[in-house]
Structure formats: C-alpha cells, structure tokens
Image 1 (cartoon, helix red, strand yellow):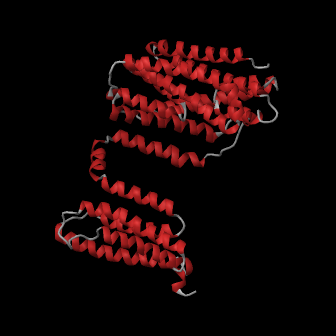
Image 2 (cartoon, one colour; image 1 turned 135 degrees about the vertical axis):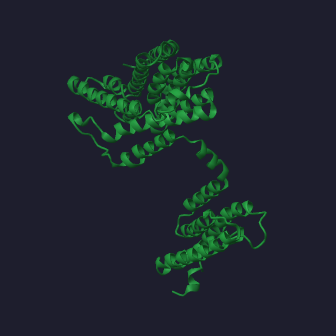
Image 3 (cartoon, one colour; image 1 turned 60 degrees about the vertical axis):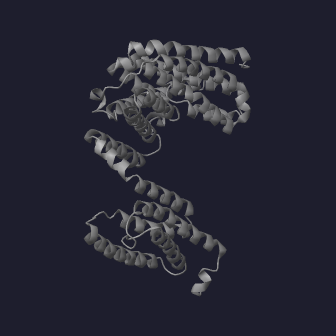
Amino acid sequence: MDIGEIFNNGNLVWKLFIALLLGAIVGTQRGWVMRKSVEGSRVAGIRTFALVGLLGGLVAAVAKQTSIVIVGFTLVALVVIAAIAFVVQQKRNQDISITGVVALLITFLLGTLAVYDEPIAAAAAAVITAIVLDNKRELHQALAKLKEYELDAALQLLLISIVMLPLLPNQGFGPWQALNPYEIWWMVVLIASISFVGYFAIRIAGAKRGILFTSIFAGLSSSTALTLQFSQLSRQQPSVSPLLATGILLSCGTMFPRLLVVLSVINPDLIEQIALPVGVMMLAMYLPCWWLWKMAPNVSVSQSETKTNPLALGSALFFGIVLALIMLLSHALSEWFGHVGVLVLAALSGITDVDAISLTLARQSTSVLPASVAAMGIIIAASVNTLVKMSMVIVFGSKKLWVRVVPIMLVSVVSGLGVLLSLGTGL
C-alpha cells in the first residue's frame, strides 16, 4: 500500500486532529508556565507540544500499516532530541527539572494512543497530565505536610487493595462453599478505605464536614464498615459522638435509595410493592440527621489519638474474621433448617449483606416468586441488617453514641415493617 493511501481516510483525519488537540492541551499548560520566558529560551511551548502530539499520531498511522517498531524508533529519536535540549537549558539557567521533557514524551505517546483507536483514554490521560503539571505548588505543599505514618498508611492501603485483592480466588471454600476469600478481603479493603478517607477528610475539612463527606461516601459502598469504624472512634473520643451519630444514620439511610435504584433496574414492577416502606425507613433515618447535625458542637478530632492509625487495618482485619464467621453461620443455619422459606433466607442473608439477597429476590419476582413475598424478604433483610449495625453501635460504641442512634434505628425498622404489613403482603 502506498504511504499516501494511509492518510486517505476521513476517520484517520479526525484521529490526527485529536492527537494535535491533545498535544495542545498539555502545551497550553506548559506555555502558560513559561509565558514570561525570553523567546527562544524555552525547550517546548504550545506549538511544539501540539506538533509532537501530531507526530505521535502520524507515526502510529504509519505503524498500523507497517510495523509497531517505527513507534519505538521515533520515540528513541525524540528522547535524544529532548535530552540535548535539556542539557542546553540546564547550562543556561541551572534548572535540572526534567518535568517538561517527560511531558513531551507523554504527549507523543498520547498522539499514538489516539490513532490506535483509544481516543477517550488518550484524552483522559492528557487532561490528567495537564492537571498534574498545573498543580506543582499544591502537590509539593501537600507532600510537605504529609507525615511519615500517613504515607505508610497510603502504601499499606495500596498493598491490600491493588496487590493482594486481585490475587485472591473469587469462589467459595470450606463447608457449604460459604467462605469466599475475595469477598471477605474486599470488605477488609472497604473498612480500611473508609477509615483512610475519613481520616484525611476530617483533617482537611474539619470534624463536622469531614464526617459528613465520609458518611456519604460509605453509604454508597458499605455503611456497615462505617458503623464499625465510627463506633470505635466514639469510644476513643466521646466528644465527637454527636457528629459520629449523624454520620452513621446518614450512611445507613443511604442504603435505602441505593436499594431502590438497583431494584428499579432489575424489576421496576417490584418498586410499587416496596417504595413506601423503604421510603418510610429512609426518612426515619434521614430526618433526625438534620436535627443532630444542627445540635452537634463544632469539635475537632484529636490528632494525637488518630495519627498512628489513619488506616485502622487492625480493626479491618478483625471485622474480616467476624464477617467470615457470620457467613459460615448463615450457611450452616440455612442448611440445618432446610428450605423453610424465602423469608428465613432473607433474614439470614441480611446479617451480612442486603444487596445480594435483594438482587436474587428481584430476579425471582419476575418469574417464579410473587412480588409481595419478594418485597417482604427485602424489607426483612434490610431490617435485620439495620439491627446488626445497631448491635455494633451498642457493643463497640460509647453511650453518647448509642443513645442517639439506637432509638432512631428501631423506629426505622418498626415503621418499615409496619407499613409493609398494613399494605397487605398476601402471605
């Protein structure tokens, strides 16, 4: 094929334009930083970066028709040119930073990536690159404020999540295939992540706003994990208990709208049966949050008590062991009692998780299971799960915490079951 035919493609023209534009995005940031430099003293500005992005796209277009080796050779040549320019610049102004050179090489690769049918990934990488380059001062200031134990905690979180979690088998082991190492360790990662996010949210935004942010974050992932973490924190620092109570209720209440969204995707008809009781349980959690939030004092979390434990890995590991035992007990009870009904299974499943049993019942309600039975099972699972979290507050939390949380959780459970029974379940 003639080289000219390679570019005789309208689709390719758009990809090359994207490659040029991505280079211009990075180049705009670099050009702005060096806007006061004398003309000709800069290694690369917006024009150079844009052309390097285009160069990457052109080389990728040729490589797709010939050999990928061309990309490697061109990159090596670009490295040599950039290195020479860096040496000349370093002699002139004693600037030994190679950030601009690295950004230039990244821009070339972004252009190749855009033509290699990955324009979205290339665009995302270009924006992230520009943001990283533009926040030099903020990143350096944050790094200067970062303490050694906080860095250790961040590295430990990366270890248990990115390194260890993918290595675990995602299947059942042991009696009744009840123990899934991946699911158990995933809960450990969730608990540790919530502790980590909460620590820095409180440190950056203060106790009041930090706890609010952490609670919303946890409500979308694991309100059980947050309940455990906040309960333990309330014993360490009782003065923060009113704020922690607000966070627990807000997080636990978020479980209900999340449940409605999931069920509406699986079986929209089931929403008619479950919307009112779930809505009542949600409001019973949410409405007191506003009052508790207003009444809570503006207190601070003591750094002396939290500075050595931003990850709370010990608590996360303990909860993982407890979760494994509960999972095993749930399967054992189900096996011993046999198929006594969906509601018993829902109650047992609610001890550890609401989403799994809710998805199962929602799917079955589209064919073999009456919607009323599925609705009752889901409400029972949510109620049991709420009672389990209430027990955590009582066992692990301070008195100041559970006197605020326990009555509201009880009202939520009783009101939800009462509304469902008043509607008539057909059981």
